[in-house]
Each structure stands twice: as structure tokens, then as C-alpha cells.
Length: 139
Image 1 (cartoon, rainbow, N blue to C red):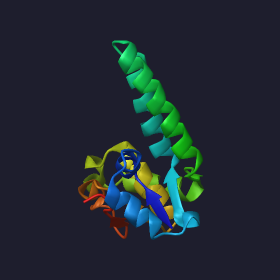
Image 2 (tube, rainbow, N blue to C red):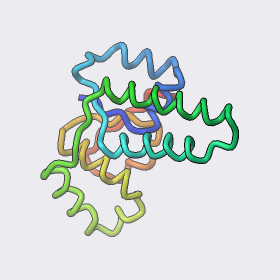
Image 3 (cartoon, rainbow, N blue to C red):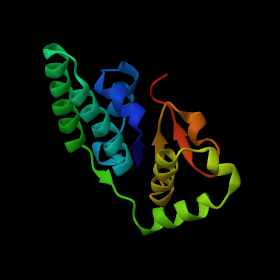
């Protein structure tokens, strides 16, 4: 199973050829994302829409929001289940993990709980998490 991180979905949305090529190599049933990524993507789209300064930005923001919602509707969304929550609680107690942002830590814990591979361009954000398998399909 491959879990697409926020940045990978953003690059997919933008039409990044390497991301598209790698996704074509994987069975659709093996692609997922997390509730955290869904929140991050939609929050960004909502903010852009609400902060639009003119009609062109407003219409573009709305179009991007709809496209993002459509893309997310095609991917199963993994929740923070009991196993991921317990993993998160354990990691929060370890000093070296405190530098990892909360959202990234949650995404990493969901990935570990599902024994999946995280697909992200931000490999360095996740390298401290033990046994987390990470791939970069962007560069």
C-alpha cells in the first residue's frame, strides 16, 4: 500500500509527470491518503478562496477547491485509528521526535499502523521515524 502525502498530491494535482508515471505503475487499490492530508489540502484551498483579492483569484480558487475535492473523492482516506493513535502517543514521549511537526507525525503514524509506504517529497521530515518506508515520486 502506498500513502500519498500532501506534497505528492499537490504535485499530482499540478500534473507532475514523474508522479503520474509512478502512479500508473501501481494498482489503484494500493493508493491511499490520510485524513491529515485531506485536512491540509482542503484547509489550503479554503484559505485561498477566502483570501482571494479579485474576481480572477476567486474563480481560480473555487475551481481548485472543486478539483481537489474530486481528486480526494477518488482516494480512500485512512483515519487515525487506535493503532496509529497509540503509536503517536508513544512517539510524542521521545525527545528526538519533538522536532517533527504534529501533522507529519500523525501521517507517519498512520503509515506505520497500516504497514504502508509513504510517498512524499519531504523525505527529511520523516527520516527520524524508525522503520517508516518513504519514497519520493516527485524528483
